[in-house]
Amino acid sequence: MTDINFGHIRIKLAELMKKQNISISKLAFRSETQRTQLKAYIRNDIQRVDLAVLARLCYALDCSLDDLIEYIPPQDAHNTES
Image 1 (cartoon, rainbow, N blue to C red):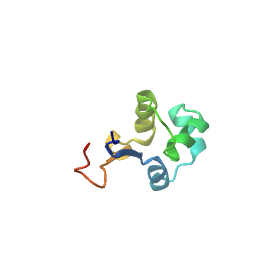
Image 2: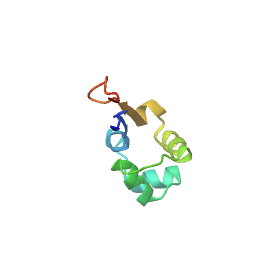
Image 3: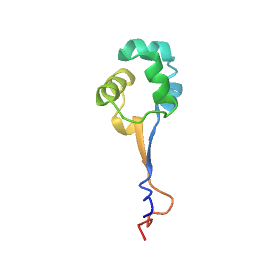
Image 4: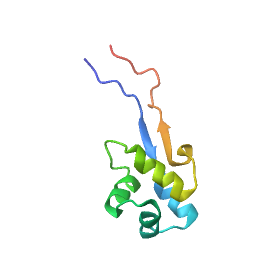
């Protein structure tokens, strides 16, 4: 049995923060989120997405969910089990 590559999700928080020129401290305050948690989102180093955190980030950054996350399809779109 082979693993199927379904692609991955990329969180674009670092790009949004840079575009809006907002520091991690200011975003943590506005979104009522811990800096350590934000750092994990910035590094795309999370395993489970917290919908409440995403909602707070969208509110604090005045953006949509599409602005914050992106689906990256697999390189081989026809990658199936053999």
